[in-house]
Amino acid sequence: MQLSLRDEHGLIFVLTKGGVPELSENYQRIPEMKEEIREFVVSKLSGFDVSDILGTEAICERLFVQMLEGGALDYQDRPIVGKYVKFDRGFYGNFRKTALDSNEIYNSFKEIGERFFEDAFDAIRDDPDLGSEPFNNDNGGGGDESTTSIPASDRLVTVSHNQSEELEKEIDKVLCEVEAFNSVDGEDGLREAVIGQLKAGRELIRAGWFKVYTLEVTLLSALRFLAERYEKEAVGALAAGLIAALIKHFGLS
Image (cartoon, rainbow, N blue to C red; front, side, top):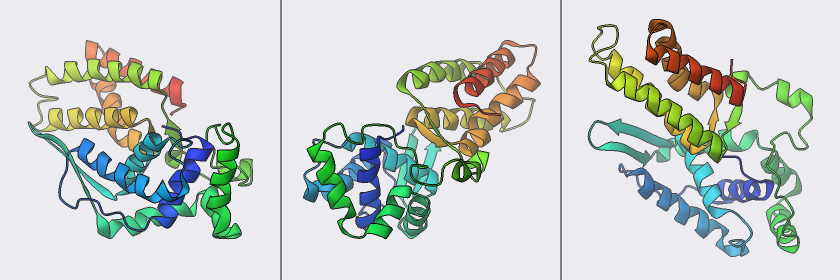
């Protein structure tokens, strides 16, 4: 999920001025944790009366994904009971620093000072169309030089709703084939590992925002194995087709 420029201002304000959130350090269902994050975000933005001009739900979803990928949320997926997450308070500071240090909005705040966010929100209230374009972290950040310095594996990829639906259907087809196997290559646990990688990749697609390397070590790794190992079978063809689709959509190698 790619935020608009104004919503990114809201997210960076929360990360900059929000302190350490009071989130559960016991395992919660994902919707429960998302609701805790929503309460945190809304409380931090409430003093600026911006609920009608910022996409609060989009900000919350983006923050959840960032915290999950950045290690501030611990994720568990267990048979029968499913998925849980809990807040890692000890790691939040590292996550926050990493998220802010490379962000152009945060760098602007550091240069301009405390009035930066108040002025930004005032400007957005005065002009409802201001900042509605997608946020690009290279805005004002040095043009092509800054983008070429980012390793390909660290590149951020966003997924539209239509892309997500299309890719999820193809992932589910591959999953159905693999789940029908008694084993993969006759190795204990390999079938479950491949299924876990496929499901983890599907969650990244559903989230709408991920770094390339996270998809590489989950979905793409499993698909490449299946396409090579089962080249002449249906699951191999499905895996190869999905790899081609991912390359087409996101320019992955």
